[in-house]
Image 1 (cartoon, each protein chain N blue to C red):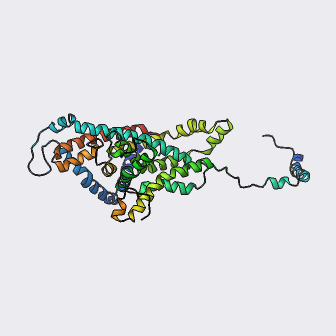
Image 2: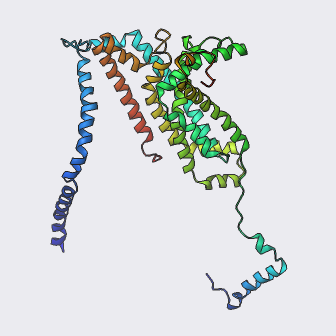
Length: 82
Length: 305
């Protein structure tokens, strides 16, 4: 690797200052911003609908645990509250 | 110089032997013994006793005598046992396919950029912590009452009567409930696998212009192969032992259409076929060992889990 000439070293800050001088907003643009992730709403809705297949039987399980024997065997009242 | 090199090797193994002896001290055995004793008493001894009785005509108590391989020969020609093997293997194969496909798709969905990720993951894991027999009784109620009403309302003839009473469809209900309960465990393994794939691979494929479907087909699936193999074989072994969900849903019925191997073996304890079902259990054990060997040979060297 060849050593850069001594005159090249001070030219770098000069270049930076020149750029800043040309466009003062460029330094603001370079600030790291939190990258906004694109939310997959289709996937969210689909998975939420799939979650119903878990939640509905769980609701029946829990609601049945609070019912009396007669209410629990009522064939029309699987999804009703006690 | 030559003397030094010839003297050195005998000294080295002696030192190694001494150091090995020091490492395996009594504390090691002290901690090991409880597990060994418990495992021997709870697993090994009953297995040996059962294997011994499979060569007798014992009914579980009283006198017995050796009858050789008669039980094994009879078991191979027993249509009830053969149908239970047929049902169990068919059920296991169907459940493995259903569970792995659904669990993989859910894992892909739950590792993508969705909202409420933690809440959804929690919901999908809940069935794993609910007892199988409770789930079976709840689903039995739904299949016997709610689903027929739903079918009648929609005018679907097949669903208008309970599928649990249909010898051709009762196994479908068992597959659905078993998949519902065991899918979270499989899904968690897939999520762990998907999270272990480095993001650089997807970034590189993005630069190459690969679509999401191509990424799934040519990156995700090949890198997940080890997890698929483990899930398929562990699941298959697990479903071969199906018992509680079948008892809660159909109790082996209608007739013996959904009677699994485990149910057939356990029925031997109450019906006086103790030695006969011990022979059946031994055959089942051999099959389970063969599947375990298959599992080890397929997963050897993969280093995925």
